[in-house]
Image (cartoon, rainbow, N blue to C red; front, side, top):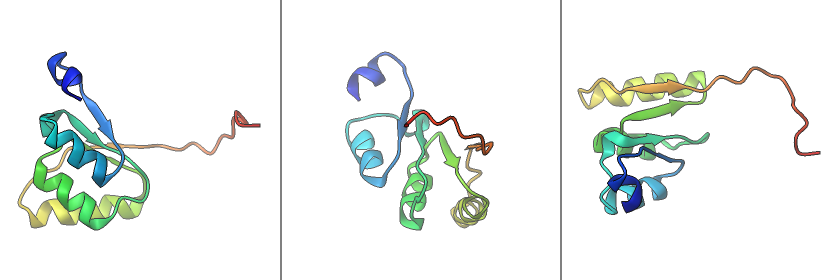
Length: 93
């Protein structure tokens, strides 16, 4: 993580544990994208409170959840939207 920070790169994390590790290692929150399907309310709150650069939205329910949490913290959270087109590539066969 420190190498990424030194090189000016961004970081993608997919759990509350990874988010904590990245922040504890000194990664600037605004350079972190929080990704992962099944993010808990507590994990989303932690990400919003920390000021992560983006939260990747994986479902319609998550749009509502993140909007509510961000609003309750008085912030406008930046997001990315993950689109699944429903095409099966059969890459794991």
